[in-house]
Image 1 (cartoon, rainbow, N blue to C red):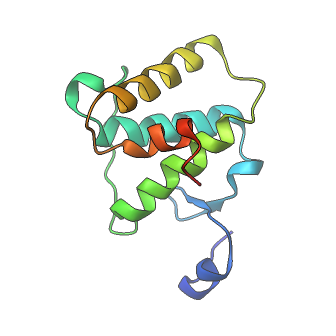
Image 2 (tube, rainbow, N blue to C red; image 1 turned 180 degrees about the horizontal axis):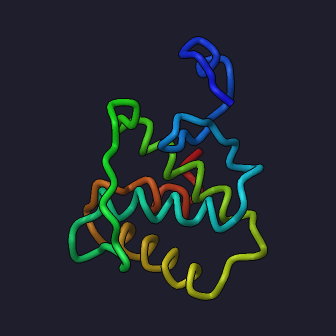
Length: 119
């Protein structure tokens, strides 16, 4: 689904994929939500906090710091509702949350979601 800028303002948060399609996280497969969150994490967390395997992506101007911060909050909140999280994914999520809560990182959104102060 392609949305214009005005359409996006009228709708709730949607993840934009690299082809320009928008996805409602509540309708995304759990694996898609998880790997989207991990991709954002790996591009914005400090080097020592990255989760392997790490694949570098090019983020275009659409992916502002504000949008990615919102993405982290929304995607993590959505993952907290899922019952089908694989053990390996859970380990990665626990790492992201623990690192965010124990370090002064640019990814403070994860600790906000964990503490219930996020979206």
